[in-house]
Amino acid sequence: MNKQKNIIGPLGEPMTLADLPPKNTKRWVIRRKAEVVAAVRGGLLTLEDACDRYSLSVEEFLSWQQAIDANGMQGLKVTKTQQYRGTRPL
Image (cartoon, rainbow, N blue to C red; front, side):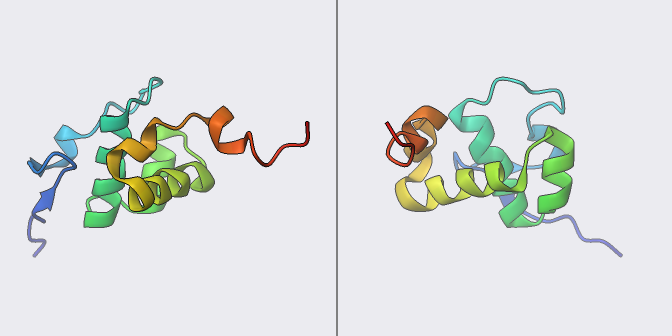
């Protein structure tokens, strides 16, 4: 028998699959990224399910997770241009 998991979202509220961003999400605001990370960490979705559901690469998802670990939800504000600015040759 599967027991419903008690997952807490990034804002401290209980979260279910119904609370996740829509599958066709194109605009990834901080809260939506954090919800997907929380869902994977809590076991609501597997990493593979999240990547399939939202057409994400594993690297993109892991970058969200690392940003949260390093700087909390505010770490998700960083754009790809800002992330890679220091690593690209001028």
